[in-house]
Image 1 (cartoon, rainbow, N blue to C red):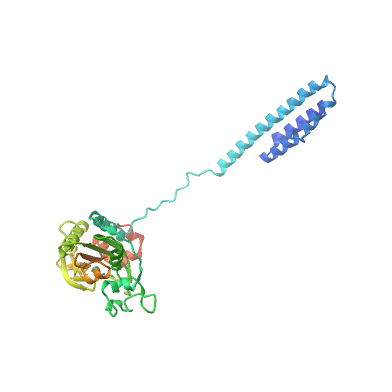
Image 2: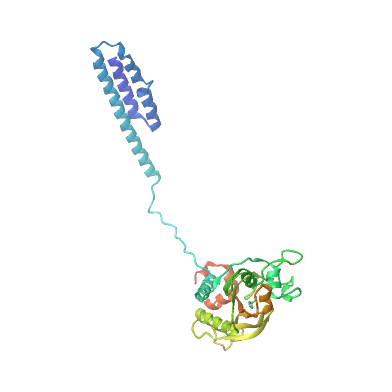
Length: 341
Ligand code: PHE
């Protein structure tokens, strides 16, 4: 029996020290120390020994068990260390390889101009609204007092979705006036920036998609003087103190009286140059006092309330703000251009 135990010890220790993986170790543990293992089988024969032999064999058996257990523990540690070593090797970083430069993105100059504009209006108590680009013709035209037959409704100018001209890509942000009047509590002070669409050919000043910013104020006792005062203050914030503006009479179906606002040309200071096409002035927005019929159509009492509205071209504003000469640069998104702002 002693020999049996010794041969188990030798065979087991050899196998354990050579084991190449934790699974193999577990198989060896079961094979020698498990319930049906070799050592256990020997111990089961203890009963047949004489009372003198029993304690001696018992002690040897215990020693073998202890030796196998500690060998298993050591082998486990060895394998874990080797595995860690291998992982460190596999996942090693070569810090001598040159890195990939990260290119920091830029805010598009037009959106920079929009953010400046929004900041100015928000500081004056206006709320910024967002609205749909696919719009009902009733909001884009009818409720803005441009009824059936109005030239701006022509198929040659407008992108319609359906034969009976009811759904369209909005041609202006002015439908946001109606949406605000229908949903907001009075008094109202809003601006609404967004994309608008018209069937225009692309050139230095035109694009079939461009951006407008709509603005509207409705309250008791609002006058044309508020319109002029507010817009002049905004232009001075954007373009600097002393920026010169002028208001010219104009016509829009949804405002009465209507006007257009020009800013004196920054290039020539009003003398006339190629940038302002010899005019000395650059047109920046259309505006006016909201037509009483427009107020009434949206359920606002025009005897009690008055209001003004404006719509400005955002590209043009950004071009003036950053002295950009050609509209197409705004849409091309060439990084060499964008990186300059
Ligand atoms: N919607 C008009 C346009 O696109 C601009 C405008 C807005 C005029 C609000 C008056 C009031 O030309």
